[in-house]
Length: 402
Image 1 (cartoon, helix red, strand yellow):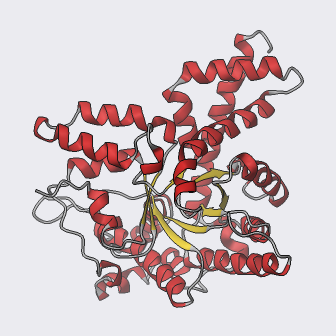
Image 2 (cartoon, rainbow, N blue to C red; image 1 turned 90 degrees about the horizontal axis):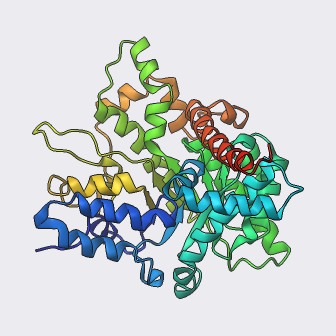
C-alpha cells in the first residue's frame, strides 16, 4: 500500500520541485487537528502520519514543505485563528507605543505575524544551506501602484528574519521595486501576476537587478526569486468568461483550466529555455474539472507534474486533495509537456483577454495596472488589510484610546 500523501507523490515526479504551505505557519496545528477529526475511520492513522510529515511544529527542520507563502487574507486568518492572543499582543503594543496610531500599530502587528512564521521555518532554511525554508511577506496591497511606499515597506520587511522573501505585486511599479530589491540581494516573490508579459517583465527586472548586484559586489547568499501564477484567479476573476459569452463562445470548465495552464506552461518553457534563475510558482489551484465518469481531477497539478517549480498549496486545497485522492489519476512526470487540444487553443485565441495573457507581447507594460484579475485580487487583499486594521482599531477602543 502506498502511504504517501498526494503531495508527496507529486513532488516525486521531479526531485527539484517544491511544495510550499500557502498560509501562515501558526495555523497548521489547528488545521491538521480539524482534518483528522473529519477523516474516514479507515484513513485516520494514515492521514495522521502524512500530516505529521508535511509539517511538525515540534521539529520544523524536518518539514516536507520547502517554503511558505502568505498574503493579507492569510495573515488575517492567523489573527482569527487566535483572536485572544493577538488582541492581547496588540493591546500590549498600544500601551508600549503611546505615540503610535492605528496604522502604525497595524504595521508592527503585521511584521510580528511574518516574524513568528519565519522563525518556525528558520531551521529548515539553515538545514538546507539557505535553499529552502523561505517565508514570503507581502507589501501592503493598498499601495500596489506606489513604488516608493512599496520599496520602503519591503526594506522594512526584509530584515525581519534571514529567510524572509518579500512579496511584490505585478504592477508596473512593482517590477521597479523587484529590480531594486534584487540589486540589494533581497529575495522576492512576484505576486498578483497572471500573464506571460508580466512574467517576462519580472524576468527582465531580476536580470537587471542581478547585474547591478554583481557590479556592486552585493552578497547574494540570501537571494531567491519566484514568479507566481495565480492560476484560477486568472480564469475566475478576469474577463475570460464574459468575453466568451459576448461572442457566443461556449467555455467549459475544462477550457478555463486549459487557458490558465497554457499561460503557465508557456512561461515555464521560457524560463527553462533561457536558464533563468527565477522559479515559477503555481498557486490558486482548484480541484476540477469534473470528468465524464463523475470523478474529479486537479489539472492545476496533474497537468504540470514533472516540472521544476513551486506548488503553493493552501490548507483547504490540501484537505480537498486528501478527500478525493482515490479519484485522482497517477501523476505523469511528462505532464508538463502536454499541449492543449488544438480546438481548445483555437477557441481561446478568439478572446482578447486570453491573447493578452498568452502572447509574450500581448500586453504593454503600461497596461499591467489595468489587468482585470490583478485589480480584483488587489481589491480583495486590500479589504483583508482594512479588516485587520479594524481589528487593531477595536483594541484601541477596548483600552479607551479612541
